[in-house]
Image 1: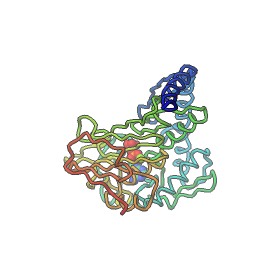
Image 2: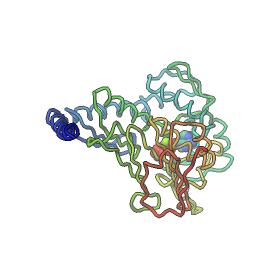
Image 3: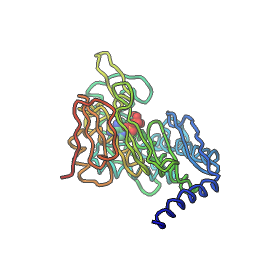
Image 4: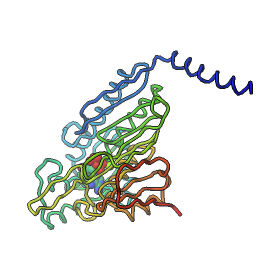
Length: 339
Ligand code: ADP
Ligand code: MG
C-alpha cells in the first residue's frame, strides 16, 4: 500500500519538474509557397527561428521544383528536351522516388504527364477539352520509363516534360520533418496546403487529430488520430473546370487515357510514414480506383487509406480502425481487411 501511494506522489512531482525546467514554447508560421498556403508549427526553445529555417528549406525546394522559374531544375530539364541536364541531389532523389512509385503503381503515377496537363489548360488556366487526336499524339511522349536517370544527369525523350505536382509537396514535408528532427524538435505540425505531416505527438502528449475535408461541403467528415506520419489527400474537388459541354474535368489524370480520372472516388487519403510516399500514393490510388487500390494495399504493409466515394460512402483500411472518428452520415462504411 505504502509503495503504491509513493508512486502517485512521485509521478506528478517529476512531471512538474520537467515542465518547469523546459523553456520550450510553441510558435507557428504561415506563408505561401508551391502555389499554396503553408503553416508550420513546432514546440522548441527557439520555435520562431526553427520555423524560419524550415520555411527557407521549403523555399529552396520550391526553387528547384518550379516548372515556371527558368532557373529551376525542372524548368531546365523540360527546356533541354533530349539533352542531359545536371540537377541537384534533392531533384535527383525526388525523380528516383517518383519512378519507383510509378513502378509500384503500374504507371498510375507518372510525372511525365506535363504536356497533357498543359494542353488541357491545367498549367496556365486556359482550360479546354482537347481533341482525341491531340490527346493521343501527346500521350505518345508520356511515360516514366523513357526518363533517363544517370546519377544527377537527367535526360528526357523529345516531347517529354516533367511535372512535380503530385509529389513535390510531400517531398518538401519530409525535408521539413528531417530539419525539425535534426534540431531536436519532438513535436511539430507541418501543413503544406492540406498535406499534413506530423512529427511526434501534440505538445500535450496526445495524438494529433487530423480532420478530412468534406468533399460535398460542410464540416469535416472524419478525423484520424495519429502521430509521426503524413496524412495526404488527393481529390477531384480540389481543382477542376466546367467545360462548354457542362461536364466537370478534374486536375488528376489517368496516364493510360490522357484524360481526367472519372471513377467512383471523390477523394483518396493516404496515411504513411513518409510524405513523398503518401503524396505519390494519394494521387496514384485516386487514379487506380477502389479495387486496384485495395490490391495495392494488400501487397504493401506500409500505408493505410481512406477512400470517399461519389455515392457518399466511405472505405478505409483495417489499420485505421481504432484511429478514426466518423462525423458524417455515410450511406455505407466498409473496412478493408487483409484476410
Ligand atoms: P494536389 O497537389 O492538388 O494536392 P495531387 O498530389 O494529387 O494533388 O497532385 C495533383 C497534381 O499532379 C496535378 O495538379 C498535376 O500537376 C499532377 N498530376 C495529375 N495527374 C497525375 C498523375 N497521374 N501522375 C502524376 N502527376 C499527376
Ligand atoms: Mg499527390
